[in-house]
Structure formats: C-alpha cells, structure tokens
Length: 300
Picture 1 (tube, one colour):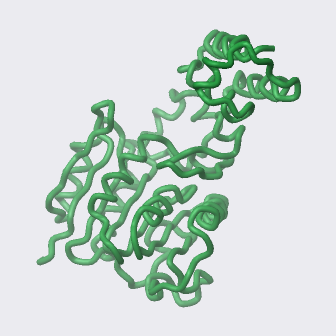
Picture 2 (tube, helix red, strand yellow):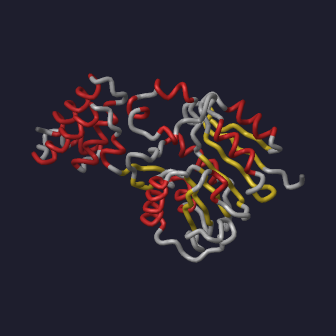
C-alpha cells in the first residue's frame, strides 16, 4: 500500500472508532513504524510501504481499536524533547506536565537539590536535571514498578549516577548511595531522612475517585489508578504533600504541584493556609489551571 493510502486508512479507521485526533495518531504511527516524517507523508505519497511495515501498522491499529495507548504499544514517548521508556503500570508522561517542568526550570539555579514526589517514569526530575547545571535530585514513588522504570530512564538519559552530596536526605540503611540522583520507594516523605531540598515538584494523583470511570478508555482501562485517584475531592495526596513540605524544604524553598483544571483556587488556599507566600496559579496552553507554586517564607 502507498504512503498516502496507508495514512488515509489509519485516519479513517481510528476516526470511525471515535479515537480523538486520528490525524495526529496516523502521523505518529507512520513516524514510529515506517520512519516517515510529516514531510515524507506529503512529498512521498506515492511511495510504497514495505509489506512487513504494513503488517506492523495493521497490528498497531488493532491494538488501538482496543484503546491501548500508543505510548504503551511503542514503549517510549517524547517529553521535554527527551525520549522516555514507558510501560503498563506506570503513568504516561503528558504535555500538560511539561508546564510543571517549564515553571520549575524558571526558578532552578545551579547546584539546587530537587525532590520529585510520585515520580512515575522519572520524567519530571530527569528533565530538570538534564536542563540544569550541577543540580541533584531524589525521586520518590510508592510503586516498585515505577521506580525500576525511572532508574532505567535516568541511566539512559543522564548516564550513570555520579558522585554528589545527597547523603542525609534518605535513611542511612537505604541502598540509594551517594549520587547526583536517586530513586527511593516510599509513601511520599516516608522515604526520606532529615535532609532538605530547594525545590519540591510533584504530579500527584489529583482526579476525584468518582470521575475515574468517566475518563477515556485509554486512561481508565490501561493506566494505573494508583497514579490517578486523588480521593473524594482529588486533593488527598496534594494535602499531604503540602502539609509535610515545610519539614523538607529549605527556608525560601519552592513547591510546585500539577493540578486539575478546576483545582487552582482550592490548592492555592491550601498552600496559603500552610504558610506559603507568593502563591501563583499557572495556566497551560489551553488557558486551564495546571500548576500551583508557592514559596516557604525565609522567616517564620
């Protein structure tokens, strides 16, 4: 089948199945499976696609019709210009979370220490370390599966952990060692010792439990509910992060939280109630509330 015919076929089949943005997905499938750029699709439309590649594309279409996410099908995804390995059981990195990273990067200075709670694939911490100088960080997750993937991504993108000064931020009996980055298992701050960080970032579970069954099949049927379910109002984990943050931030340190589109006011109030100043709600490119940030006062 020719490139143009294959492209049209993918768009039609996915579109008829009710999959949003079938055009974008068709371009991704042709890029990932056939190595074709958007320019190739338009300029080489009469070229034939190799039979083996066509069979792979047919396989992928069948899996998408079962609503399996492309990210899990290919096992990798772009985030902040970096390629992260992804797998079932670990939350998929999304463009919305790039807003969180971009916001934190504006405040990140050389040599800072970063704590990433609910790290998942490690995409937030790894991106912050990749695009900064001499910073160090710890990613924490309750899921061993997520931590194994985060460690893999860090090794692939950042290289092996080098000497650093992170001792004291995790328990002495931890196997994390002393390095530029580490990933620890635990329930939020329980994984840590007495060390303090300049920045805490998190994309926590923030979807109200009652809403999860209404989400797209790609999300509710494939992604881990542990990484989605924020309790009755979606703020259970966010409250705990805010409540414990003052014990793990330096004075003047910053907290950055990804939130749901309708949670800006509530999370801002929680931060102010915990004593944070300079509380700000940052919107995403669609104009929806996406990140809340605040600063721990230098003086109590």
